[in-house]
Length: 162
Image 1 (cartoon, rainbow, N blue to C red):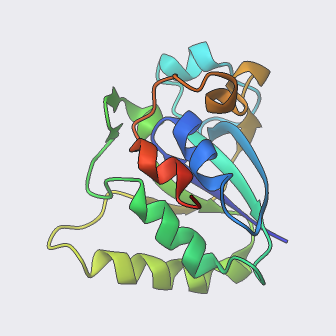
Image 2 (tube, helix red, strand yellow; image 1 turned 90 degrees about the vertical axis):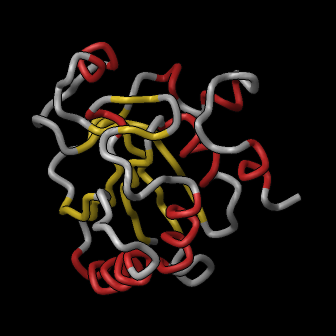
């Protein structure tokens, strides 16, 4: 099993998006790469420095890292700074965070492939994971519990398997 931490704007839609793929074994929404320690949603909304992030555990033999990141780039605007869809603020920045350096080669290759599509530099962070704190329970699988909840990701992308 491998793990990447993917910040793609509001974590509700990002989690729902990744949950649909074979090879994804577990997802958890939380707050990454801000000051260490537990943090609340309210603190994150007041510019704590954390990014809304989805921890994605996956079986690389079923879903290679390159394919996982190809999916990730489908649902973000990689040129947008601190904004995805209608959400704005530092907590909505995009980023790929890793705690396993063996993934870095594949991640960098995916970034280079995506960057080749643009004339401007991408605004997606690529950093080691500094901290991750799981979000409150009501945020976990939010769009499953609240199917009409807000999501910046186009609805058709949430059901690619259909």
